[in-house]
Amino acid sequence: MRPDSILQKLEGKKIIILGFGREGRSSYHLIRRYFPDMPLTISDKSETLFQEDFSDEHLTLIAGIQYDRNLNEYDLILKSPGISFNNLDYLVETERITSQTDLFLQEFHAQVVGITGTKGKSTTASLTYHLLKEAGKDVILAGNIGVPLFDVIEQMTPQTLVVAELSAHQLEFLHRSPDYAVLLNIYQEHLDHFNSFNNYQIAKINIARFQEERQFFVYNGDDPLIADLIQSYSLNRDRVIFGTQHHTGIHALCDDHVVGFYNGKTLLEEYDLTDHTHLPGRHNYFNIMAAMAVARHFGLDKDEILQGLSTFHGLPHRIEFVGKFQDINFYNDSISTIPEAAVAAVKALRKVDTLILGGFDRGIDYSRLIEFLGEHPVRNVAFTGPAGHRILDEWMRTSLPLPEHYVVEEDFRKIVDFAFEHTAPNKIALLSPAAASYNQFKNFEERGDRFKQYVVEYSKNHTL
Image 1 (cartoon, rainbow, N blue to C red):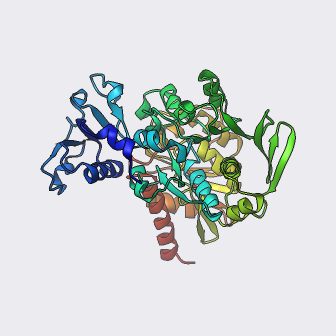
Image 2: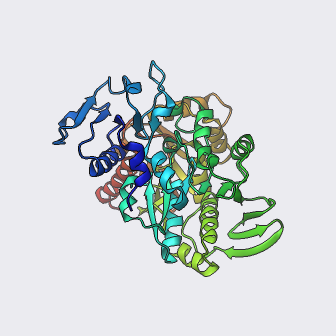
Image 3: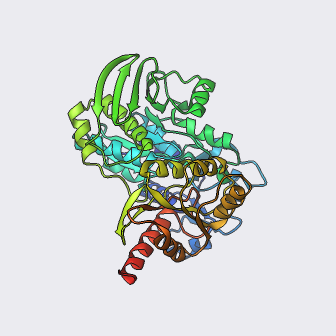
C-alpha cells in the first residue's frame, strides 16, 4: 500500500527525526523512499551517528549532548519512543510532536488491533496474531514487538489486519487510537521517562481515548486504575471486559482453567483450557482472555481458538523454562521489570526455591513485593543492582523474616553459582528481577540470555 495521508503530512515540512534507533532508521527510509531530495535532519544523543554512511547530500546530522536543542525550529518532530522531554530546559510545542505510531494510526487505524499494558502485551499481541493467522486471516504482527510500523506498509492490503504491540512511549503523543484496542493492566513503570505515574496512565489510556463510539475496546475489569481512567474520559465503547467478576454486557470470566464468555449473566460460550495452553499462571489467563475476545470479534469459532491456543508456546524471557540442570529447574523471566511481574511468576511456578531480584532502580514501590515474599517465603534470594540493594534495605526495616540464604552480588556468574549451591532438588531457581536491566545490560533480552548462558556453562563445568 502507498501511505498517502502520511506522505501528505510530511510533504513540504521541515522535519527532524529525533532518535536514530530501529524506529528512527525506519522513518528515515520511508521518507527517503518517497522524498529523496527533501531537506531532513537526524538527531541522536549518541555521537556514533556521525559514523553512519548516509551518502545523502540533503541530510543534516546533530549528535551529542545538544541533540535535543532548538526543536521548535522544526515543523514536525518525528520522535522515537525512547526520547523523553523531561530534562529539557524549554517547552516543546506539542503540536509539532508526532511519531511513527501517531502517523500510522492516523492513516491505518481501521486496520489496527492495538495492544498495550504494563505487562503481558508482547505475549497477548503474539497470541492474538497467532490465533488470527492460524485461522487464515491476513494479519501482520508489528510495533513494539520489534518491527517498526512503517516497515509493514508495503506488505499491507486494504484487508490486512495489523496486530500492533504498543508501549506507553509509543502512545504518548497520539491523535488517533486504533479501531480495535486492548488494555491489559496498569502498574508503576517507566517513571524515569514519564516523570509521574499519572502521566504514564494517561499515555496508556490513549490506546482507546481517541476511538469513536462504536469501535472495539477490550480491557481488564479487575484493574481499578483502568476503571478510573475510563470514567474520567467517558469512554463509552463497544467493549469486552475480562477478569474474575461478572459485568453487564459482553465479558469474559476466568475460573480456574475455564474461560466463559457472557452477556450479563447469560453464558454464551465456555472454553476448558486445561489441555489447550502452554502459558502458565493466572496472569496469562488474563492475556488469553484478551486475545480470545479479539479472535471472537473477528469471527473465529471455538475450535479455531482452541486449536490456535494449543500450538502457541509463548515467548522467550517470559517465565521461559531454561531446562533442568543437576535436578534444579531453571526459569528465565527477565521481562519482569516491575514487582507485580515477579509476584505473578512466583505464583505461577509455585515451587520457587531461589529468586533473583534487582537491577536498575527507577524508584518503584517494592513494599508489596516484600510483603508477598514475607507471606510466601522463598528460601534463597540473590539481590543485584541498585534496585536489589534497596529491596533488601527496605526488607530489613520490616519485621518480616529474611530469606534463609541471601546474597548481594553484581556478577551474574556468581549469582548462578549461588542458585546451584542452594536450590533444593526438583525445585525452581527463577530469574524474575522486578527491575529494569540497564544498569548492567543493554536490555532485558541480554540479561535473560546471559543468565541462560551461565546456567548451561555451570552445568557443563560441574557435572555430577
